[in-house]
Length: 245
Image (cartoon, rainbow, N blue to C red):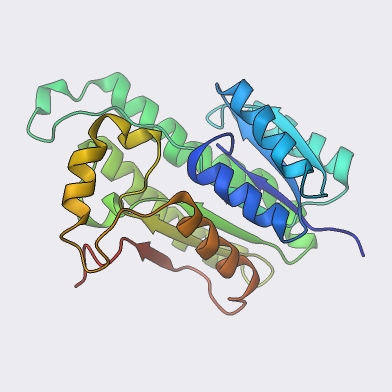
């Protein structure tokens, strides 16, 4: 039986790496995408191949539509199919919400180009191939898109836009392709390394009393892909109960 193929953007480290390893462990061939962390990407490739599946690595910034197009075309050329797209790549600049003047135009442009337009490019260009396999898309967004909190006002706005994009594309791509978002809260990745003690203290006050691990997000991603065939257009918040409403 031919293995399914999953493309995970931003998968050299953190949540993306955990998702790539989870899907590889379930027998899928994996496309690792990165924009800067080449050493980490090839370490992830080695770990994936040790699980007995194929892994290709592509450097591509998802805000570059032509680079995304080339990555997907090469995936099809090498592995003949694409079943799953996980849009995990994202960027931010840490700007205090009260510092309105500090939220520079270039910060807005960068976060919107990657987190929104880049996600759209990946979905649009993968869609013809996903449709052939009755595939699925999972967008990794953030609770910031629902709460307006997070690393900056621009980041929160970009994740709200990505959630809206999920709903729009779920309608457009149905019934062949399902599109959902997973919106994590605090996750123990390099993004919070400089403030991890503060974040852990904050998480202690939540119902589950801890920060999420990348593996927590990976497990849910796999469940949405493989065990939720009647789910589309949903934003699934994963925050340990921090924002119960």
